[in-house]
Amino acid sequence: MLNALLDNLRSHAGIEITVMLDWRLHAIAMDGVYAENLPGAVAAPVNMTGINTVTINAEHDISEEFARLILQSDAVWPVAPEFDGILQALCQSVESLGKILLTSPASAVAIAGNKFKTFELLSQHQIATVPTRMLEGDYSPGEWMVKPVDGVGCADSYVIGNRQDFEQISMRKGHDCMNAGGRAPKVGALGDAGAIAEYVIQPHLQGNKTSLSCLFKQGSGWLVCANLQRFEFINQQYHLTEIVVNHHADSGAYQQLVGQIAHAFPELWGYVGIDLIETAEQMLVLEINPRLTTSFVGIHSALGINLAEAVLQLVNGKPVLDSSKNLSITIKVKQETNAS
Picture (cartoon, rainbow, N blue to C red):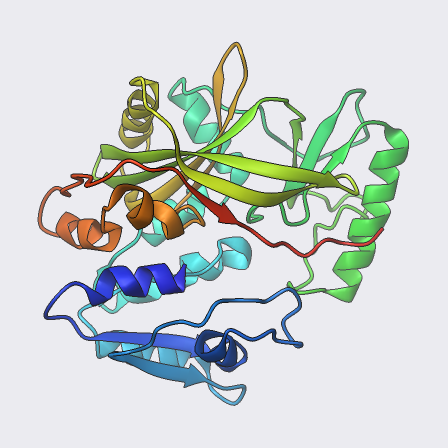
């Protein structure tokens, strides 16, 4: 995503680009190497020609360094996950320092980054969405998806089909929380009786997994393309294997849905990904991602559209989304699998 974003931005004349990189990611960005202290982190080399790079080392105060760079810039594009409030805090910092934020504001991230709040908002506006409730109490008969309320992608999401699954996942989550893994431990781990409010439960629905790449601004929404997501199912978890960018032609239903979401959620701004589950009977919204998504990587190759340029156009007006081609581009995705 960083490579694609920089390629898009570099073609815009008259702007100076500065990238803030964690020191553990710097070698990956420069050389495309595997980082032993970041399990699963493999990346292609990033073309940093003409880019100012600021490496953040362990001794740096990240918040202070980020604030310093914000003040030196006219506009900021945070690229970060929603979990643990990371993206929300970055957006809030940009807003508080009075600079142009090239993503959705912190107030929108607070809703879109929370699966239950997203469900509530969509339901209030009669937009079909996957039924979602906070995980409380005992197992109910059926097949369910259990996931962190602020999780990204399929990380830490499990399918449970019986009481034994529920108890095993509860024990596993309690163990993961105690050992902290790659995330800070949460009070609401599944293994903590009476403290499970940080997880949601949804019915496990079968259907096509579609993602929409969109732009939003003040109640208006533009569909860029519809993408197909393919998964493997391993150890009770879905693992994303590839995305076919610009897979589906829009009959009008996708743009209609984007318009409905824009009306219901006018705080959304800039590039947003929307995940859907499509069955024979209906099209259900699963998640709204107020950030760059993996599909962004293939959009220029598939459609010839420079989305970074389009986002910059949103600052003062409407985006120009004239495509110069109409191809389907497949992006292979490698995810680390958890041994059971």
